[in-house]
Image (cartoon, rainbow, N blue to C red; front, top):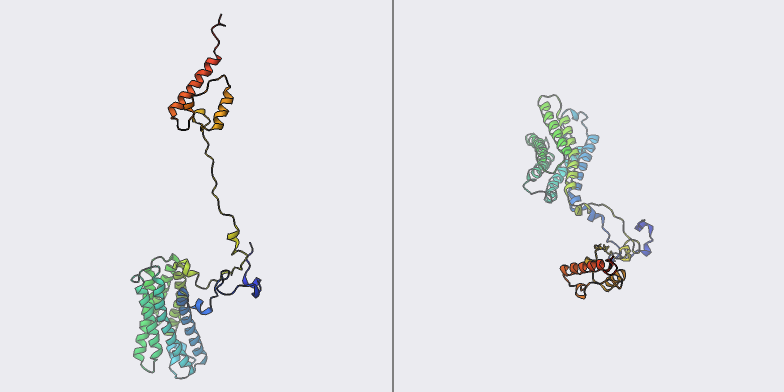
Length: 328
């Protein structure tokens, strides 16, 4: 059956908002701040801000050999590129902490707060260390900057480790998380052995986290009930009055089918109604004796009906038996 949507009907024929035939209009803000949508949008915004700020700093930096050292070299010049890099890192870290707060509200629907505490604290720790990296660049304090960077790497490892301990996750997500932990740990070993630069290790770690966070959002969205999933921005066609909205009222009410109970054909167990009594008498004939009147009552016991049937059979046998005067 074709469903008429709002685009198929002129605006003049639509009822006003709030009428019984029309669904209320949801604004873009209401869709954006839905419970399950907000945490996902915050994590996506954090990744987008970080990528945009770092890309802008790379394009406008004065040092074209920064990649031989580390990404923090982009924020050491005090110009526009440094401001864009440090600002993007600070905003991304704050959004990551906010994401951990809203993730606790989403995970409370499917598990206890204690079960998801480790994952939430690891994500919040990563956001805090990332904010410190942007607030304290290398020219301000190299020691504090290096400690914040090391704490950020450990927070990423803890985040992956606690995600492996979550229940209700698929094998694919567990294997991907374990693969991310293996890459980050092996990259740290290669960095200590001076096989790769710190910039390569940071790019590898942030790339894995940027891929893993949307995967975590999809897993959490799969755990949520269907009522919250419908509020995540899925559009439904608005029904027009007179099409399918009024169709259930025009349908006939459902009537159960009454099955006829088949009763045995034996006369002794047939219901004693006037029709059955007259039919039995017409088949037996006027000369054949019938059952007594008390045997045809509806409340007569089974023994009485059986006795009446026996009397009928005996009378039938006597009627067909030859008389004594005709015997030789």
